[in-house]
Length: 505
Ligand SMILES: Nc1ncnc2c1ncn2[C@@H]1O[C@H](COP(=O)(O)OP(=O)(O)OP(=O)(O)O)[C@@H](O)[C@H]1O
Ligand SMILES: [Mg+2]
Image (cartoon, rainbow, N blue to C red):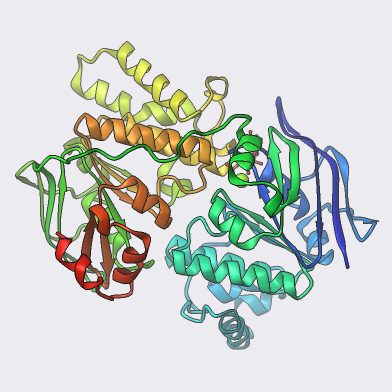
């Protein structure tokens, strides 16, 4: 049996102590969950273990042998395979080239023996049960979920002794998430150590044997999974309790339709979608991955023009670009926060204030001070600390970057919010704050379209949930019919139990 022993690890970025004496111990045969709020230091530990960054102090030992990890190559040699939170794939290479990157001589990657490489890649994908991803596809053309699957395949490819999954489920559909949990369990059963990072307590309970909790760069608790219940885990993570994750729904949602789509069509991806989003409502969008959800959001936000009719408050609009959609009052939280959501070189403050500044300069007379107050208030509620305002957005942890993207959208002055997986990678404490904020906004008339890969979130946050299948809306669930089970049923093209079917509007 092998043991991974991390002792008193330290890492500073300028004034930030990302790790401040963190320890963790994991054994072969176990899935070991690592928990902690956004910015707690989880990914920093992972980057050190995988040779992406160097630590300032502390030690890492595997089987009582101290590991000196100075480069990704050292980590691979030590048997550490990592699926990174922000993905390590090279967009302009194919899936096959990415899977074997670093293992193959460049000549081979570049084409000489490409056919062979692709065969091996296809075999690996099949063995992992994800052969639906083409080995020849360019990574840049894949949606995030598929890129995530390739990242996982790359980490698992060399049968590592330590498999690290840093928020690898956060972009996956429920079915793909289940697939990954099974992969993690199997890998552990076969004798590896699996380190599993996630903000979803339910899946941690489902997959992990033991857990370690980090807070502010230090381990604050560890133990067998059934020794630490959810309340205790949250208390350890945040240093306080969270009373309720989901705010109460409103009794009734207004009838007035704010945003309507009729016959939205985009190639074979959107096959004529009709949708009514009402004032004050949070309308969920569910379904298996790749059923047209992304295209629907992009079409409504002007990111990918589609055929069909879009009406805002009864007037036809033509959002031919995200900028024009925003000018109409429709704001999108995009899928890819790193590429579309943020200017990584700019400060947090500039990222959030940008849409506001544009509006001020356009409208001429806007109370600039009120705007600044609004930015500050939203940032504070999302727990983006003022002390970090001047920092580059690119230096934030994954979850904190996501929070900045959301904050930026919330202050944009929009009347319609299109939130595509807006809470991906956000910790439970901030999530409850976000849901409360969304409810308050709904209370003052905001119309929100809410896509999430998390079934619990969909069924608990939304007033209604539209389930997509094959580019269409297969059904809309509300009231007592809004259950995880029914969302799943409609996702696979099934029908609802007879009683339920009547009540569905
Ligand atoms: N390259 C960097 N430059 C400056 N600060 C950094 C850098 N990378 C990380 N940090 C900081 O180190 C701290 C820990 O970040 P880390 O990414 O480890 O958090 P995390 O626990 O993975 O959070 P999340 O749940 O959001 O992914 C954060 O305050 C982060 O802003
Ligand atoms: Mg992280």
